[in-house]
Length: 486
Image (spheres, rainbow, N blue to C red):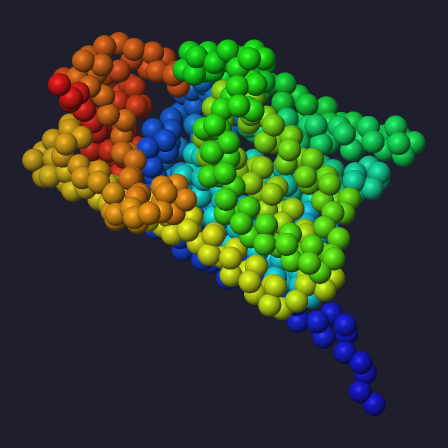
């Protein structure tokens, strides 16, 4: 008599889950293999000594940026692009798994409905965060956010009032807590508020006691947040670069009344709002319950993350919306999972998926075109560097006019820019300076680096002289001069 098969072997979905994630990681790796370092990447990843890297971070902490990703960028050195190709697929997979856990309450999909949820996350995550082609941006935004999602996925028992962790998991989460606290402005404060709120809820409402593991992780996370928010660098940048006045009038106008702010919100969220609206209509028609305790927690976290951006001096940077957009996507996945198991029809699912993939594809196409544009500029500089090297020169001085910075394709008529943006204007990998500014001894916002003169080519002023890119092409330095329009 044949013995019954193991239920795990009868269920093909865990294997499909693993296979799909493996294929996804390969596609992400393939995409990153075509990427070149862009402007911010090249000026960060010089071959600094350990002492120089630490000095650079201290200078940035005091004058510009206190995010822990900024600190990491100075220690990576000229191998940044190789590191990016390896770790980016890893972080995207971790983001998918963590988001899946937060949306469904499980790590591995066990039926076709949750497998569809995984597909939503795999398509949505790379299409919403603005740092997918920008390594330095990932260090400051997407990677710390992924660590935060993983942290709360591993510590999901705090949502049910259970604070005890196994020792290996607790030790693994200790450095994660500090990274989250010192990550970036909205990820840090959102994580700290959600973490503390969960603990207070179970102490006050659930009449439970906090254990020492919860308290230690909270202290470490709060310490990182304290170092981030009390650093002089962000305050210096907000005051000098943004002319920002933190008062009630400014907050009310910029957050609630400014038309450009709400317009920008729609631009950032429209790829999620349209399919979410369609899903909500289907749920309403089929009388499917939308909200669950998990959904309310995610919604609260998203509101906190978005609220921090309202009060920020630089609310208009798309990369700043990565966390609230990811939380929105997880909420969408959470509602879809419940709806798909509660009477959502196949035609409804097909219509939702079609709209979702169409909206996500607009950004994915733009990102691919952006990568092609950056490669085009890099190849132009490589050609000029080769000419200089053939002449026996060790330094390349180029003018902006020598490079073709035009977009690689034309904006589609009648479609607003930023909604289906195919007008991809690449960024110059070098910061261009006018001859007048080049001759001045200045203080860089990233640190005290006097700009070099065109005659001496002293290897200071990373924004004036691109040393990592020059070494790649066999030169000592590259300097870019931009003649101002008369």
